[in-house]
Length: 459
Image 1 (cartoon, rainbow, N blue to C red):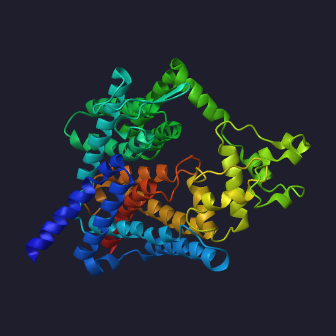
Image 2: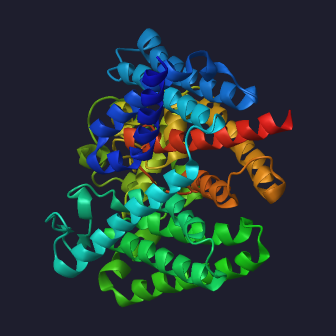
Image 3: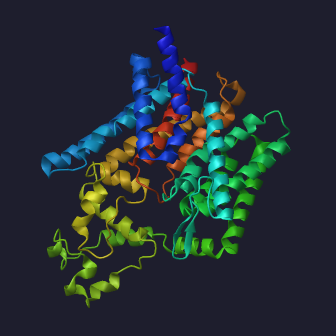
């Protein structure tokens, strides 16, 4: 029995270590690993999964998952058949993932330093592969870039999926902190040089990948790092480093016509919150009769030459129209939302209005959560995350006075990854997608584990 437990423990550790690789192979592999980690965790830890030193945060997070279920089944009971109701139940797999990861960190079964090393190794390979694809026209396995009129995306191993930038941002932010741990015995100027080279590699590969928001968030990450790091000597170096990263990004921006064009369209298309809110709350009494008719405003002959068209906003990236549609739907049920994946299920009902558009999700985590779980759900996920960030950051500031052997760099890696993941103004994929949820609850699990260690040492 002891041998089986040891084998199972080692298997669970290796599953977590290679978990980042599944994001390259797609949702099927991610879900398989989430399932295996959850099942093995239950087998190994059993009742230990229910032991918590700090119950407030996990209680609020559990309630968030409960609201996901309630908001979804509310649609079935009081309104109509809801095709995505099964997904609200299956979404509980991420709660189990979070609890298992937290327990592994708390019991010190997983070495977070090794996980950071693996993230750095994988992110570096992905970034080098994108550079190879840029220079040769194909990557290490023969994939060619994805091309659109006037734009080329260097996607590397991700082939036709435009998620290379998101992957590098997610795991590169964790992996970058492997440098001072791998080369801790070297002189600080050498470590600073490696930081500069690695930051440059990730920044250039992000630009080539063509995903605009990861580039901006990476620059924000560099600035945040220089602000919150407590070592004054490193603080100065990271301020200089963040300046160099911004310089590199700016230089490529002005040097490359393609990058310049893509980011200019992005900047022009940034939604004005005042315009979004005023349009969402605006009433169109003449058009109300077309609600749920299936007639799209732009194809409605009655208003083809009407003054109503004067209110039509330029499309640009489409984010303004998506956000307006999202706010419209939030207004209809602001407390608990309309259930998981509700945006794509309900956006058609207001397409009779101008400046509305149907997509699969609202392209912003906060709007996505509000649509699906309302303000109650948003509060239940944000409040515990903020509490955990503050508690773990205070623990980081203790430095060597902490009662554990976890490196300061590990604390910074987890703290900054969570901050960037929940950065409120980013356009993004769906919060409830497999890709984003798996990563989000993985790093929250790390954060919870560090907080549990803190609570344990305080006893």
